[in-house]
Length: 390
Ligand code: LLP
Image 1: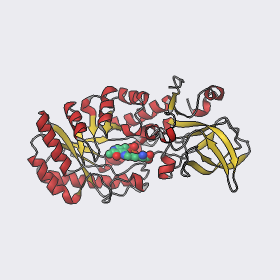
Image 2: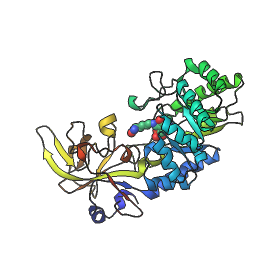
Image 3: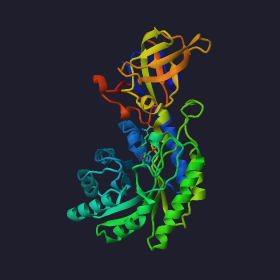
Image 4: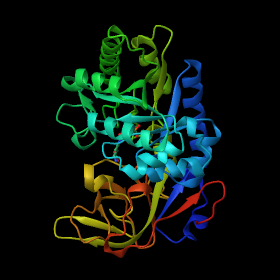
């Protein structure tokens, strides 16, 4: 149920702020991604970091997606939610020994290894536990994702992956490892990427590195090209999901696979972002010296993206009439930081205390990045189908 179609009186009964999840849109998005991937024989591991809410994970798991994790707790959560161990990958530059041991004992599908030293640690720990570890080597391909610099990960100056200059050494360490099997190569160049040329450039690099290994007699089974597909934050209703066909088409066309390699993706945002809205109440409407402020009961503690990345989210007053008189507002939260602002000069119908405001496309990196700063309440959520506050 789209947020506009909800009975406003019903919605007003709920204590704000809360995340509202449109389960119908979520299912539709997941189905579209799955059809487009299956058609090409591609595998999707959902990146849990985008949203690890139970109902969302259930929906994703039930469709047969794998899980892409970046902590031991995410690995454990995936297992608890029914993702088979054989479909779980574990990435991240700073895996602790405890986390590595958990993943080894659970015999997850693969570690995405980010440095030579990590490779050696996994080999040692696997030996101690009498386990074998599948690894994919994360290569930093130095491809510019043309996205916000905080969410660019594939450039030489980023901390992620093994740089080209160390690959020779990585390959020789891999040959020495007794308890590790190289199954794949892993790449991830950034998030919220909307220019398909970025993925095309990535394919060129993936081909180069796959050939590099093959020329040295190492067969690569898995090409893991990461996630990063962006969504349209400006048009949540008319563009409610990314063009999965166009996205997968790029990899279908430009990745050389010799008919042998499996292609794996780690999509997060593209699967869940549009399904979530942060719903908040206007606490106060205040005319400053130069500005009109709408002060909400949600702040950067509930949705950090605008404060952290100057990210745009569409802001709407629920129950607005098309001909309502408008004002430009700075829409802010209650937190004691000037960066606690969801949008500046946002045209909205003249609003008053008690009105409901929806901040759209907040289903990815929203609830999961919430904090208790200022000793705020834990964030609540409402699902469109159950329509109960949890
Ligand atoms: N794989 C790896 C190795 C990643 O680092 C990430 C995201 C993903 C997959 C999933 O990327 P996605 O498909 O969601 O773009 N908090 C930021 C986004 C950080 C993304 C971190 N890595 C934001 O709110 O925009």
